[in-house]
Image 1 (cartoon, rainbow, N blue to C red):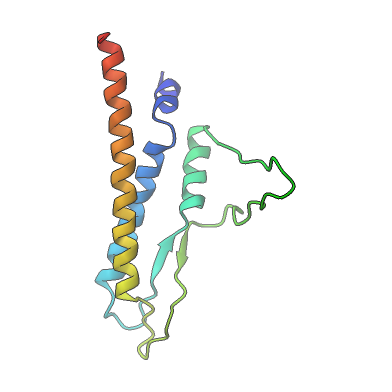
Image 2 (image 1 turned 90 degrees about the vertical axis):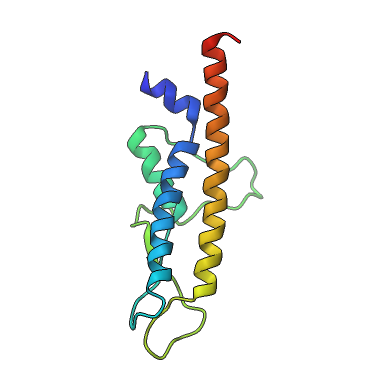
Length: 133
């Protein structure tokens, strides 16, 4: 039964989990923007989502359908939490750029909300089908 539920929700439920983890990492970056030698980190969304899909047995593979398509790289199974490359070096060794972090946090929030809306619509559709309306 859980596989049927996983199929109904698709990748959205897993994406929401990844967005929530990323929000925690970005919030930690913002909170430590004045901490000397703090290194900003971010999540590799593709890596985490692939990991979540493998755990649930719902891997979606991408294949090239034309020789002109660009190949997929960077999915080597390495840890999803990465250090962010600073745009400008800081004297105290901190690599957090508050504006970049806030923009990333806002973008992540929008994606989370969109996934939530799609998932909510799917649940409402299933409830309608169950009720026979």
